Amino acid sequence: MNRYRQRTDGIDPVARSRSRRRALQAVYAWQLSGAGERDLVAQFAHEQAKEAADLEYFEDLVRGVLKHVATLDEALAVHLDRTVEEVDPIERAALRIATYELLHRPDVPYRVVINEAIDSTKRFGSEHGHTYVNGVLDKAAAAIRSTEAQASRPR
Image (tube, rainbow, N blue to C red; front, side, top):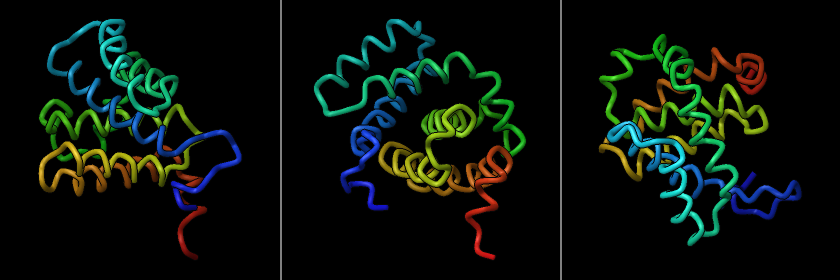
């Protein structure tokens, strides 16, 4: 499905993409500063209000990552070639958000989760960071959403 085509389920994919980009920035800032959840969400929600973004989705992503960071890091660790702390901060934020979506947002197809993480990493990360994120999330999605991943593979 073209992500810019009008959807009938009330979800605006462009607004969701903007929400994910803001969430990436917020999680990145939290990783560096350790700011409190309330301050973090308020700071970035103010920026969200200026764009056509899905504020509710943004808040779910940020609050979900902060609340479940230990579980997310544990789910990621088995697919990494280094510790979570050694992963570039932008890539780490993208991986945490995507893993949160894979685990807690079954309404979002895993391919959308991966593609959005890749797009955000291309925009904000290092030159080849998106390839690392893609490789890790391919493995994570196959483990976390094995039924969905297997169903989408060619036979």
